[in-house]
Structure formats: C-alpha cells, structure tokens
Length: 220
Image 1 (cartoon, rainbow, N blue to C red):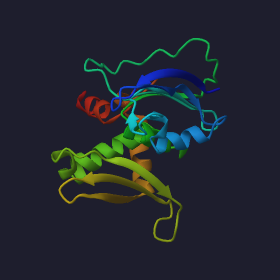
Image 2: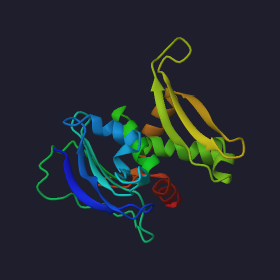
Image 3: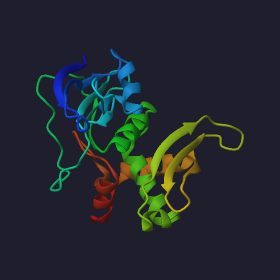
Image 4: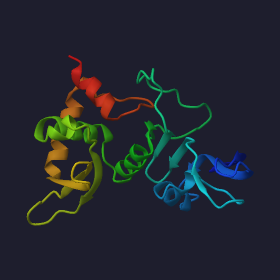
C-alpha cells in the first residue's frame, strides 16, 4: 500500500507553516492517481494555504508497480560519493523473486525508468543503446552535454516489421526537443549484446543510468 506522512512545511515565500503530504511510498496499482501526480510533478509540490505560492519539495519515495513487477527507490540527488554498489532490499517486503529493483536519482530519469519498465523493456539494453547513440552514432549529443532519454515504442508496420523505438533530447542551442527513431531491431541487438557481456550484469537493486553504463563500458 502507499504510505503518506503529514509534514509541517514553512513556506519560503510568506514564512508561514502549512501541511505537506509526503508520500514515502507509492503503490500505483492501489493508487493509480499517484502515478499521474509524479508525471505532473504534483506529488512533489507544496501549495501554501496562506499565500497560494507553489514550492517544489525534493523528497524521495519508493515506487511500487505490482502489475509490471518492479520497485524503484527514488531520490532527487545522487550522493557525491555514490559507488554504484547494489542496494540491499529492505527486509520484510516479501515479493516474488522475479521482481526487478532499481535505484534512480533525478526526476526526469525517474519518469523515464517507469516508462521503460512499463513497456517491458530491458533497462540495461536501453542504457547501452542510448550510450552508443550519443557517443558513436550521434557523438554531438554527448559532446554538447545533452542527455538522451527513452520516449516510447510503436507497433510493427510494413516499413518496420518489428516496430520502432523513440528517444529524445533537449537541444539547448536550438531551444527545442529533438526526437530520434530507430527500428526495434536495433534494441534487440543491444539486448543480445548485454546478455553476452558480463560487464552488463545488473543484479540486485542497482542504479542503471548513463553514468553506470559509461563506467561499465570502460571496464575490460
């Protein structure tokens, strides 16, 4: 079940106190509206009852999706000394062995991870594909410091018999969001490459993100 804790917040605008709904865990099967609040950022917004100002509250949460069988330990900021060692799963959760556990830092990456796993995709393969796109196929993405994100997949058609996969990044020079499309075959090639590469093992509650992939790719 989702867990809610009431916290007193001092508004940074009017300095009066009000009550904030702090969700320490979110079960989107039992409370599907909370998923929408994450994607709209509303889950992390405090609305001052005194002055009406809205303030972002950067608090983490545990995200639980029973339908798709995964849990995400989310926080806004990655510790400076983070070493990518697997996190220990809390005792007493009592979930099936096939559950996937992930740690995620940053709100945009949190939303992306949810969508990747809802699509039933291998997140290691997605990060591998993103790394190759932004460092080899389109190196200007990495050179300019842009970050590539998974967007969606589309069903097969005559041109793409296995479907298509989309990614996007924000081009700050052009001030627009750029979308990239690949045949789904490309994803399956990366998935196979990850299955054959011992560096791509991500067992336990791991943080599988762009920095983890860059670290793994440098190992011999």
